[in-house]
Length: 527
Image 1 (cartoon, helix red, strand yellow):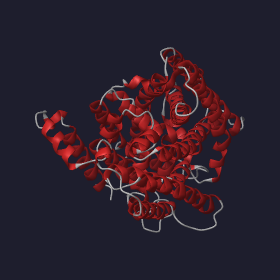
Image 2: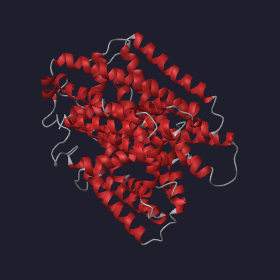
Image 3: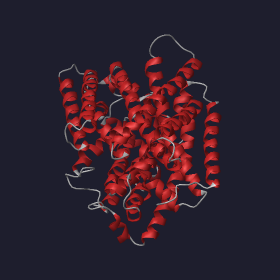
Image 4: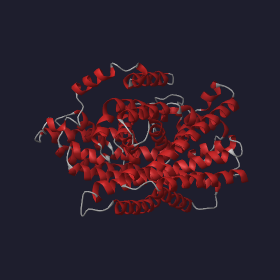
């Protein structure tokens, strides 16, 4: 077992790093004079910041701890979430992103108001605040608490979670989205470099690719596991993983807020494709190190400890402190993104649309106050994750049950002119509570046994049935009024003519196609 002790130089680096992050928040926060600059960074983010921020939002929430832990426990099948995300992001860049950016909306619920009506906006906004607090922020706090628990084993986990919530809340209150995206980029680079260093040092320790394969659990060196697998059965890739990807990468306001901040459609697309490409190496940077760790630590009591243990054991003094500081700060960054996003939902979807007119100064004060409220709620819920076998299982099972109606109403609205506002509203308000009840009954109280990816498939079918059925019994909307919010072949052909004059390396469709081909080939190597 490695020694979980930081040298003096490590502690100094941690202190300096956290101080630098808070200083960036304070410095950037001085420029946040209105709600658009606070919530959307003034809609001026360039594509590398968009790309790294999207990746960091994914990494720092639960993945950096959870993917390595899942690799240790179950092998490389968890990579299905990452390569499938690449294909979803390709689809998003090709067919969906332009509608979001051209509409100039501030939140994803606001887009639903444009496509459907205000009822769906308010219902989805409430839903988004709920999932942001009890899935995204609670997961980030719990993962951060695990890392800090290694450094301060005598301190109760609840106290460590409280400290992270306070520090993250102060940061986002100061800086807003621009500060989050700048620090996201720094942290993503550091964490990718750390993952690469640990992988190569572990590989050298094991000595061969054959030893890497032998370290995996039974049936653990394939992306497609048997249909009765408890963690990730291969049919679950189609019934759950794919649709969870669509929820997270195309409808989740916390993630889409980074895309909405892009300075143009091109910068948004390039950033999204960059994020898709950066999902692929996570097999080597996180999942395989967790799998290889089985050979060195075969009897870990908690699989989510594997990556922090590897960091302590294989990174040199000084670098260890820098990387652990970046990891904790990145976990806080997800918390910051969630708190900022949840606050933006309340302000843009409720405060600004109801009651008296308020000045930008008053709106910013309300925004920062909401951050404090949400910070407390997330901190109180985070310890519930202790009841699950791992962070990834908690994160994905909760999402699988409650988010399928969201996927249906967004994709249905974007690609089906006939879809009606009544269908969108009732699908969400009927199916989402049913999904929550299913999650509580199956995953918390264990009243029935159903693998959660199959549960997601059941919820998808239920939501689709409600959506299509209610639509067909509702008055169809006016097609002309929806042309700015629904994909059409005519718009696609018009854009094709515009792309004809661009060189291939500037043609986003060519880049997206190459990324999709590379993804499929890469996955085929691990079947």
